[in-house]
Amino acid sequence: PGKVTISLHGSFSRSSIMVSTISRAGFLRGQFQPQGTALRPPWAIPETDFTEQCSRTLDCAAACPEDIIVKGRSGFPEISFTGGECTFCGECVAACRTNALGPLLDRNGRKLPPWNLEPSISSACLSTNGIVCRVCPEKCDARAIRFEHPAGHGKPAIDPDACTGCGACIAPCPVGAITLSPRQRDNLQTGAA
Image 1 (cartoon, rainbow, N blue to C red):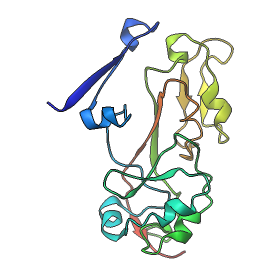
Image 2 (tube, rainbow, N blue to C red):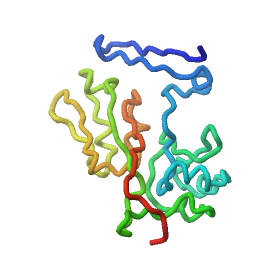
Image 3 (cartoon, rainbow, N blue to C red):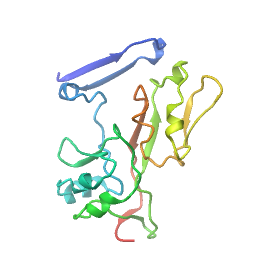
Image 4 (tube, rainbow, N blue to C red):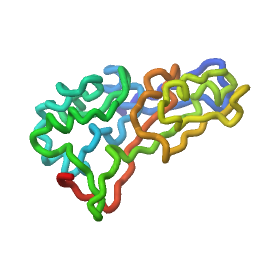
């Protein structure tokens, strides 16, 4: 109840048909992927602290030159890569007055990357289904996406250590096969550098 199941059919093999269950409200809003953990702006503190500290003024969104920070369902800022990528300019952090965004340090005081994201490519990928497509590696400045057989049809692979989480590969993907999901950070503390 309250859920819509969408099946995407086409010229793909029987094993590549993707089925996704989303809420009816999400379907009506055009959100065709299931809602998981929200992707917060770069340098966001851990989620429980973030939701306590963030004032929801969206000053970070107003400051973002790439317009990728949007108001989420609960009013907190979230990242949407549908129109661009993160350049890690730091304008969102500078605009945040509550310190919900700020330097992330490990327990030894070393700066951590802005995100700890898990990149993945679903079975909907055109190349995985025998259709030549090389959009994602062309958009990846970090060269984190490569193909096992570059000359022909190949399966894309993401090097998670090279991936910056910028999202440049997400919007250009014609089938929305690439996702970035937050991973839990261990040994994290927040504070000024």
